[in-house]
Image (cartoon, rainbow, N blue to C red; front, side, top):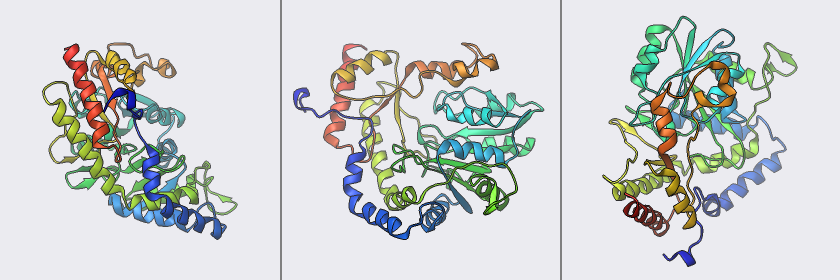
Length: 374
């Protein structure tokens, strides 16, 4: 594939997926239009049942987005002012933002070098009398070491929220992400494993009282119209997004398989040359992102761009060094593994419809760069 004839290769191409499912999606959207019910209707209820079944959870509640899923979960668990919540610094801002928004204090602990997920050993060392919960992020689509984390939580009477926004479909010892902790949180942002055509999210749990509380909180603290038992918010999954997600959910496992095939080709090509994702035993990685790690990361970004290939850095500034969290008084060097990853990791294009031809061009471009700059 010559550079002068190359169509730019994006990180994600949603148009190809739409072309495959267009007729089915349009029919579902037409059904919603004809129903005249656009919020908290049959499509949303059906999606909740199907997501709960897929995840292996007893209950699921649709919400407006993944960020709200996290905030509502903290509220449902009565976590707020005076409480501490342990989480990872190597994730999207929303994870810790939700903790701060309910009035609690984010406590950042470092990550594992292999998986970039939160390190259970460091979680245990960070416990204090104020610790109320742990938000575990299943980064890039691989579940964190939940067995160790759940043991820590049980011994210390802590609540565990799974930030599974990148990990729908990921497995750990036969259980899927979102059904292991007290609550699971999902984002259906368009680029996610299961993506809507706008913002959307879901909360899963095996505890009925938490499910009922989430349902109240997402609807202004109301179970019965105009009667409000608590202070909530407006965070409801609309019927149009639910209809789209119902169609795409049927294809999720097929698309995840295709992601894994893309990841396999990358790993086979980069074996022993650069650090590529580590898949731990008894885990099924969904490869929401495929991240490599190298010293000359920024030079490779420019080289890829010059060859028409997108790439992305997830995440260039760890959360403990973000200006918004200056009040927590972290400093550079406090969490060295996360800081190192922020300087060295790079995500390559990965999506179900990425053709072998395009992927081989990405691979050859990376290999050419490594040969020039070992």
